[in-house]
Amino acid sequence: MAVIEVVQGDITLQDTEAVVTAANESLMGGGGVDGAVHRAAGPRLADAGAAIGPCEPGDAMATPAFDLDPPIRHVIHAVGPVWEGGEYGEAEVLASCYRRCLEVTDGLGARSLALPAIATGVYGFPAAQAARIAVATLRSTPTEVERIRLVAFDQQAYDLLTAELAAASDRTHVQSDSGQG
Ligand code: ADP
Image 1 (cartoon, rainbow, N blue to C red):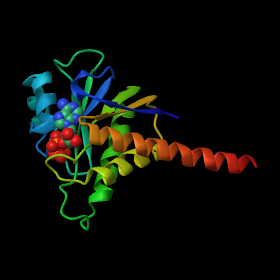
Image 2 (image 1 turned 60 degrees about the vertical axis):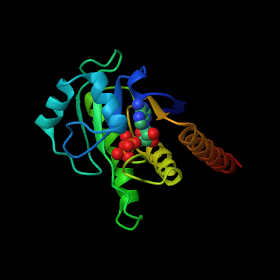
Image 3 (image 1 turned 180 degrees about the horizontal axis):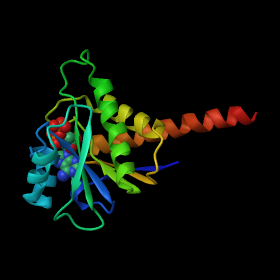
Image 4 (image 1 turned 90 degrees about the vertical axis):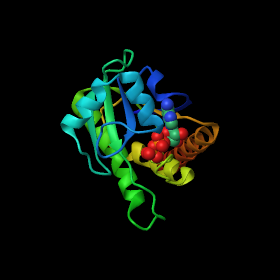
């Protein structure tokens, strides 16, 4: 099973083989984390995105990482849901993003992946619910990825993700304890 960890930092500076950006459907670059990834990867990233896009919300597509520093070799462009109050399938679309990120990474043969808190910036998804979905989906999706790193940009996201991860592993321990008893 993959090890899931939480760090606070910048997605462009991670020592993983693949990093996820929270893209818009065009895959040609945007603000927030996507702006940071495109700046660090250089202009070829937008060209590569344009060549494979557009990408539907809930899906993810891969390009090379261009000028990002090794070991990062792949950028996974995931398109999150725009939050419209929660009754338009936003939670399922967000879960789908995380599943697709793992599937696409598996397809590339990469074994380590860093992900930002998709959709919690300009797209407006509530951070606590997003953290719950991120952790639950990454834990329940079968994958060959060995190291999954959730990268929180601010303290609030870090605290939420850390708490979700701790709660999820507590539940697992309770289940396996009772299974043995
Ligand atoms: P979206 O449009 O999907 O909401 P944003 O980029 O606006 O995407 O925000 C997604 C999350 O990425 C937010 O929690 C934001 O704080 C975070 N973020 C912004 N810049 C970076 C960065 N360089 N590295 C990691 N996370 C970042």
